[in-house]
Image (cartoon, rainbow, N blue to C red; front, side):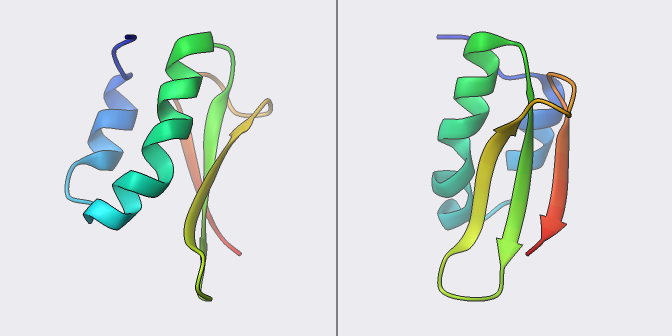
Length: 67
């Protein structure tokens, strides 16, 4: 298993378990391929936090948006 970049670990620290469960798989995927960063969106509806790889974000970085 690949170690998560420091920025990813910092993001996860202090998050609720629900947020961690939602975004951690994508952070792990990013760490595995080491090519793209992660965009995390917060939806005020029932879906809450969502994450996806984003080729416009450098590896190891996270960008947060409100959807």
